[in-house]
Image (cartoon, rainbow, N blue to C red):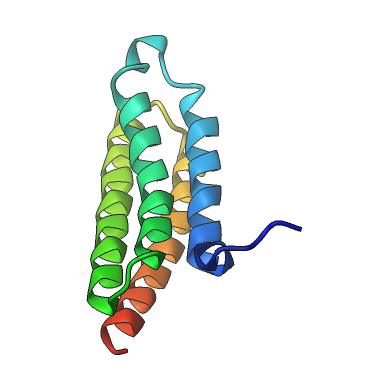
Length: 121
């Protein structure tokens, strides 16, 4: 069995990875002319959430760890903004939009809790 890194044990990382899969699945249905626009932006921002959580766990100080958690939160808000725009452009239906919003809210709560714990240690 391969070594499990600390970020792999974080529920918020697991949730953010699931959000990436949701975003990739949903953006497959976007218009082809959006391939280098909203599709690419959404995919990159969603991957950035999980990546910054992972990168933050490798840092030595809690302040540094909290910094990367803040960046992950910022990327999450970028995804939310882009999902709202995609919904308004009718690229996403109401059901899928609500599903993604629920995931974003869950991850945002966990990121806030993680950041708080990093700053209080």
